[in-house]
Length: 634
Image (cartoon, rainbow, N blue to C red; front, side, top):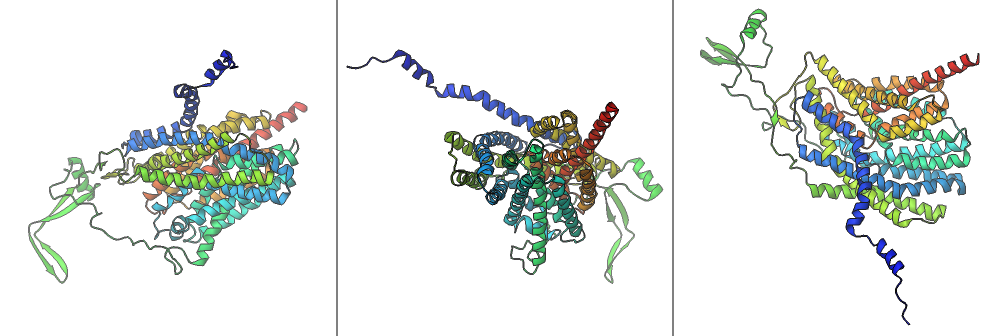
């Protein structure tokens, strides 16, 4: 006998069936909110750069449509990437971080910590930007720097990864043995300062300082920080108590200092091996030397192309004998002869003509760079994403199954998370290539127009200096750097989370708003110092060693909790948007300032600035709070 269909059951089945439109209607608000979160994180820095070029420099945005599309792709990529981390990598990392310290011996934990730091570094989106930074370095001006970024690019990334791996390993040891963060920071900083001063006095090694110090900022991104913190928190829960639970802060600091030492040691190794560009053991391709190419030289104005002198300029010439303009001298009439290798003119009239001002104009009205092949760039970005994400996921999965022996829960979500992470990183790298790097490089190349004459990026003709004397133009450029760092830092979502944590740890003594302002001002001062360094061709060691020596003093006199979050505050300032933009901007500025070999070092100064300001403010806050307690007790 056939059973009659249950109408209630059928109704439930019908309720569970969702069409494509219904699914999109449910997912759209969630996707929209996530996308807007990424837009809120990047809108200030993009709008600020565009408005500065248009309103202050008076120049259009070249390839505006391509850059705009690239920025939208970056926001979309970050949305998928962060969601992929939340669904895929973070659950794996948090599970291993919670179980591994409880069930495994210390050597196994340390081995996992090292490999986790190494793998997370390869998956950092900003590493892709570092790999492409070598194209703007002249091999003749900085041969070792050129080789590190081109011939030894794989070794460079490996050195950064090894540095992070060692830092995570040492951080885990610190949690197990209860070491103070001060005991690790002081010797690390002393070694860094010693290596920096040693390299500073060698003309071959000095150019790699900016690259090495910038590598410390590149490592503390959205992949490395959550994964290593998950492991650190898991260890602290096993071996720590209520007083040391917040020691997990210091692991980010170690992960930003150790790669600097690793890159400096890599540079020293190749320096001693004489296998960098131009040396006897060099095995790479030789770049043709600079030569005068008639096709690249500016075309001289024709004889009839000149701008008339004003009566005031003529009177000034009569009084001083000088002309404050670009001029051309011609000789008309008379006799001309070659005598003993000399040109002799008799009865010739000397005509001085004022050359017309060359206003910059777009080379082409196209809005998309024709050199960019979208299919080729997308293919390269996908391969880079697969190489970065898939090995890290396999390592975490095998650790979970073979070492921790935990069952993999919510496999569907994890699989979707991995796919989202790969897709997100692909879009992010593509968007960097199309949008953020051209925007940062373009503006960086044009900023020196405030104090120098140059050909604007992507244009022909000359521009600048916009301010006289050059000192005022350099002051404008430095102010531009400060407000860029200040505004971009306040827009970082991680800073808001850090502010809440610090206010809780200090029981309200160090308020969230005070911390956010301290960090933002520190980053602004750091980027301003970076622009100042490039504008005046200052040695990076002069701007790095004194602040770090001062930081050692502040570290020794500050409490452990202030040292922990003070040094880690630099990690929230180098987000996935800030790093590529500031890196491209620094390289652009450096390429257009005479006497400057590269534009590295701006990120390094942007990292030391917030540590300095937070520790200074923290020192004042702690002394003020202690004084209030003593007066109240009295």
